Length: 119
Image 1 (cartoon, helix red, strand yellow):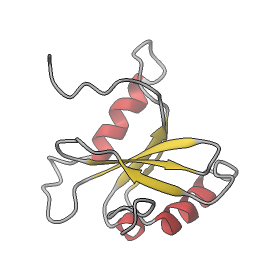
Image 2 (cartoon, helix red, strand yellow; image 1 turned 30 degrees about the vertical axis):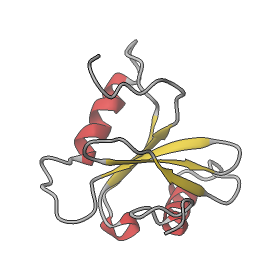
Image 3 (cartoon, rainbow, N blue to C red; image 1 turned 135 degrees about the vertical axis):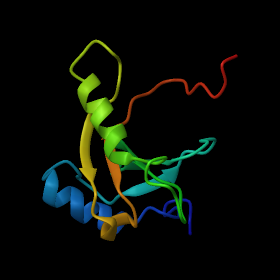
């Protein structure tokens, strides 16, 4: 896979889903990049050249659904978004494993500093 087509992220299928569920959101060809350094779920940035989003999905291969529950993550950020807690806007939850091979969700991209340790 090339850097613009990382494993676990089928950009054509993702584009089709976004076009159906969020018409007008995507304005150009999608590119994707794995955000490295994560410890569990896979996190990607996806862009159409104008806007950026984040896709979260479980790791590739066999995983325990309770340990990588995308629906739960999406539910939590959806509940927090309208509050004063700074979380990205959740855009879409997809439980259809035919799209990316596992449940996933899409949220807005927010600039910031990732904290990888408590230091």
